Figure (spheres, rainbow, N blue to C red):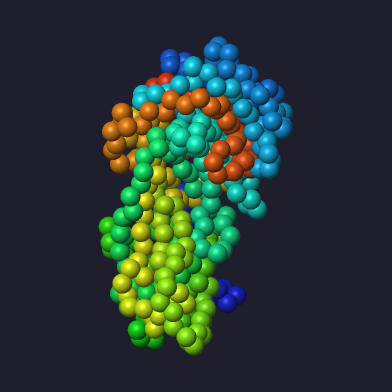
Length: 374
C-alpha cells in the first residue's frame, strides 16, 4: 500500500522496501564457469589483461586497478578494436560484478559499451538514476541494456494523465518499477496537484492529490532513500500564451518518455489537445530494470538471445525485451570495447570479473557466475 505523507514541505510516496534480489542458495557445481564461446575475460584484479587466452588486453586510463575503482570523472579500460570482438547478428552474453556506494552524488555511468556514436551502432550496459524535468537525478540505481543499428524511432502516444489539464509538469519519474507523472492546473480545484501512474497503452491511474493547500500543481519529483518526493507549486500568469513545450524526459521499460505542456501551465493557455499528453519512443532495441538495484556488489548479466534482450541481476532474470528481427541489428563496428565508459558517463564505483561470450549462457551458468562474489 502507498500513501502520501508530508515531509518538510514536500510529499513522499513510500513503498515496502524491495527484497534483496538473489536466488535460493546456489549449489555451486565443481566445474568452473563455462569457457565455451568466451571472447574475453577481464578480472580487473591488479591488471587489465584478458585472461581468456584471446589476448584482448586492456589499456588502463586512470582506473585504480588494485581495487578496480572507477572515479566517474575520466577513468576507464579500453580494449582496442579487434575482429575477435565482432558480434554481428548473433547471440552474446555480457557479465560483470559492479559495486556502488550507499550515497550517490554523481551519475553512476556505463558499465561496458561498444558503440559507434556516428553510425549509431553497437551495444551498451548502463546504470543510472531516474530523473525527470528540471530536478537532479535521484539516488536509485536502474539498469539499462540496449543495441542499435541506426534505426529511426517513431513516437507513440501514451495518453493523457489528466482529462482536464493541459500541462504535465516537469515531473516524469520512475519509482519502484512504475512511471509517474504529475500535472499543474485543471478545470476544477479538486483536480489540481494530482500524481498519476502509467498503466500501459494510453491508460493512467490517479494516485490522488498531493497536499490540501491551494497550490495549482505538483512540480519536480525525485526518488530519495526509497521514497518518491513531490514538491507542490503555484504559477500566477496574467497573459495566456498558446505555444507548447516538452516539459520532462525520462527512461522507462527501455524507452524514452516525454511529457508535453502549455506555455505557462495555465489551463487558460490552450485547450487540452496534444498539450497535457505523454509520448514515448525507442532508439534501437532496449530493456531496463526499473527498480532500485541497491548499493553494494551486484552481478549483472546482459544477454542477446535470438530475438530478445534479457537482463539478469544476481543470476535471476529481471527483465526481457519485446521481440525484434535479429537481422536488423548487426552490431559489427570498428571501435574499441570500453569498460567504465560509454554514451552516458564515466562509471562511478567498482567493476570486476567482466566476461563477454559469443553465445547466450544458460540459467545454470548464470547462477554459477553470480555465486562467486568478489
